[in-house]
Image 1: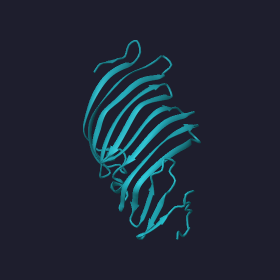
Image 2: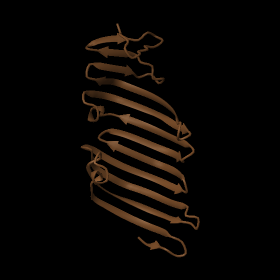
Image 3: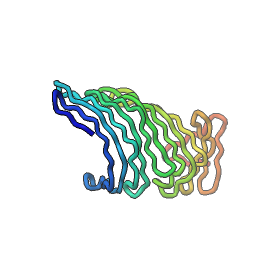
Image 4: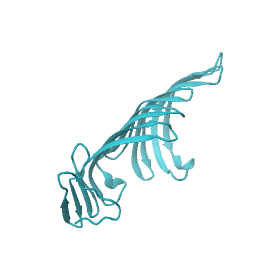
Length: 193
């Protein structure tokens, strides 16, 4: 697409990406990605950036895992409006939208982990969470609500399908420990039984 320099810099670009290896920029993130994006924007007389970015799809392998990213954002100076972000690896998905700046965050997010074993060996089951990240970027306030159905890590199983996230049962080495009507609270180092 075109790029104009007069009277002020502005652009309207569509970019196709092929055979991108992020590991060339940072060795911690080796991969093989392809995709497409578009961007429009300008820089005003005060050097303030105004731009729109639409990552239609960026897909492939990242750090050995399947990877898909789609996102839409608007940048206005130091502020970012994230209209939508969808990041997937296998059947695991994170979605987010909101506002970001150096001073404040206001982001809503959702997580669906239908294939947790992809990232944590020995993990199985389904976990879902949603929440917000708000407040100062230097001290964000995170609120979350989670549910899990037979979320298992080797010999530990958590089952808390209640809407409020209360643990209903814990399974350790084949033994199931049911929670009372109130809840089951487990602290680091506690023995259940």
